Image (tube, rainbow, N blue to C red; front, side, top):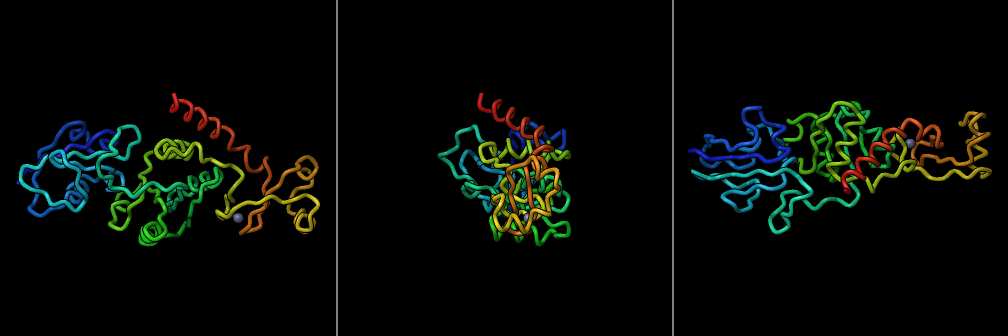
Length: 256
Ligand SMILES: [Zn+2]
């Protein structure tokens, strides 16, 4: 049987060139779900927010019928679709991430910006998918197959390959600008940082970890609650300045 399908906006990114920006007549087997049809185009279901069949919103388990016309919309911010079913659970107020093994640098940048981001360089795909599903973590990956796993409901396909561009892409996509908190989280272990008071007992015990030159000029230190690493503005923020500046500009452009 034949059905018609059209992918809108950013979802065209996932299609072959000749499939982009127009409706497609495709063969579908009786009983095929709309999720299977969408993923037969290698579009991860986590990228889809809304599916209309003949103008009505449906969920992923909808079984296709002869002559159905399917419209597939990405996760978007601007268009008002509040009256219809979103396929994603409600967005989390504090987004928390888990990055796949190829996105270590992105994971470290996100931590530096204050976002909870799990990352292990040996985590396999099953672990990532299960952990994401169980903990409600947003799975970050450039692997469509991983994002297509059935149990994954929160995920973002990262389009860019350069870490700073990846951060900007994600910030725009999930509107992270207001949530950025540098100096909050440990880049090494994802633990939370707290103030290390100069002159405190802990300071006396720990200050040998800080180069004497830095001790002379810096008056503000933080320590990781989990791994004990000490951070100061120079160590933490210098390399981040350019990215923060870029994100500020992106946020301003978006607000206009
Ligand atoms: Zn730490």
